[in-house]
Length: 578
Image 1 (spheres, one colour):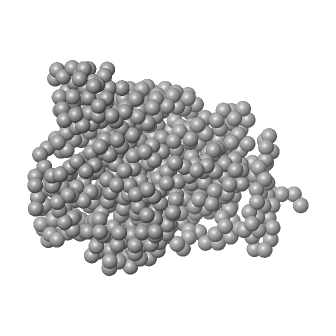
Image 2: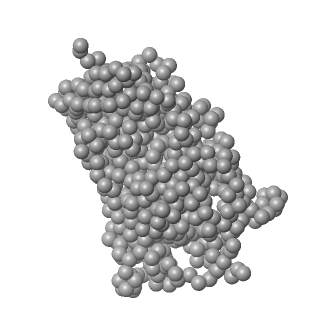
Image 3: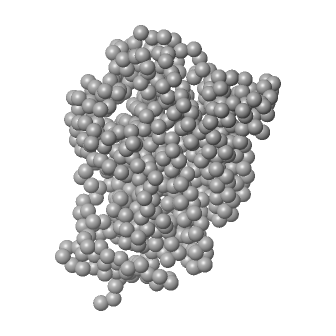
C-alpha cells in the first residue's frame, strides 16, 4: 500500500507547531498535517513561558490575527520591571525596593499569555480550515529524511495501527524533545549553564499590595511621582540578585512564579521545589514571606539545565526545526515567542519557495540569521549574568540590550523584511559589526561590576530609574512608528541607527571610566570618541587611567545628554538610613 502524500507535516502541537500551522493556513494554500504524541491538547498541566515582548506579541496579534483573543482572554503586559533589595532597609514592603522600569506602555502591545488558553485557541482556529488535519496520541514515531528533492518518510502508531506517509516538507516543533535534532546528530551544548524552578499559585500576587501602608498611603506615596499609577502587577516583575532572578507573572485566576539561576551562584538542590524556592526567596526578598507562605501551589516544574544549541535548523532538503526544537538560551528577556515568530516566518517563506536553487540560497541565509539571533543572546547570559545583582550595572546592560532589540529585531520584523534577501544580506553585515561591540561591552560591564562589588559602604534610599532616561534608548523606540518601508529603506534606517547604538556604547564606556577613575570630567571629554575604542574595551583600571590622561576635557562633548538622568540618579549623594 502506497504511503499517503502530504505537503507539510509538523511534529508537535505546542505553541511553535500550532503557530506555524496557523501561519501556513492563513498565508499559503498548503495542506498541513500536525501530529502530536499527547492525546489531549492543550495539556492538562500548566505550561511555562507566558511573557511576550514586542516581536512575539506582534506575531501573535497581527500576523496570526489573534488580537481579539489576546485582549479578551489574556492580560496586557506592562513591560518588564526589575527590583533590588535596598541596603539599609528591612525590605519587607514594596516601597523599600529600588526599581528600574519603563513607565510608558509600548506602542506594540505585549501580553501575559496563559499558554494553555492560547494553544487551545490556535488548535480551534486551525481545525476550522479544511486544509488542516490533526492527529494526536501517536507513538513510536520514525522519520527518514528525503534527499535530492525526494519526500520524507514518516511512520507512527495510533490506535494500535501503523501509519506510513510521505511529506514534501517536515518541520520539527517537538520542543525540548528535539526529535529531529537528536536523530540527525545536530545537538550542541551551550556555554550557558542556568537552571529554573517554576510553579503556579492560586490568585493574584500583587506586588504593590505587599506593603505595610494603607491603601490611601500607598496610592499617594511620593514614589508615585516617578512610578505613575498603572498597575505594576501587570508587568513581568523580576526580583534580582547576583546570578539569579525571580519572576512574578499574572494570569487570570493564578500567578506564575519562578526562579532562574546560574549554577555557579546558586546550588540547584537548595531550590529544587516550590517550597524550597519560597523559603529561599523570602530570605532575600522579605516582602514575599507572608504572602507566598499562604498560597496554594496548583502546578510546578523545573529544568536543571535549560540552554542548548544546534548545528543546523533549516535545510534545502525541506526540513526545519521550529521553536525550542533547535536552540534555546535563557528566559530573562522573554525571547521564546520571539524566536518562534522569527523562525516560523522564515520557515513559512522557505516552504513557499518552489524553485530548488532559490530554496538553497534562502536556507543558507535563514540558517545564518537563526544562528546569529541565538549567538547575539549568548554573551548577555554567559558573560554578564552576575551584573543582575547591581541596579546601576544592570541599568546599563539592559538599556544597551533593549536598544539593540528595538533596532535590530523589532524594527525589521514589523516591516516584514526578514524574508527579503535584499535586506538580509546587508543586515547580516551590520549585525556582525554590532556583535563586535556587544562582545566588547558585555565583559566590560561585568568587569565593572566585579570591581565595584563590596565597595559601597553607604546605606541608600530606593533608586527609581526609568530606562528611557537613556536618550539613545528612547530614540530607538521611535522606530516602532517607521513601518511600510522597503528593504533598502530599512537598511538605510539601520545604518543611521548605528550612530545611536555607538553613542550608547560610548556613554557606557565613558561612565564606567569616570566612575572607576573618580573623574566626572571624562564624561565631558571632547575627543572621547577617538580615545576609547568601543570595539576593544578592556576593564583594567591602570590602562583606563593611562587612556584618560590624554582626554581633552573641554566641555564640548554632547555625550552626557545620552544619560543625564542616569548620572543624576546613580551619582547623587546617598542618604543614610537607619
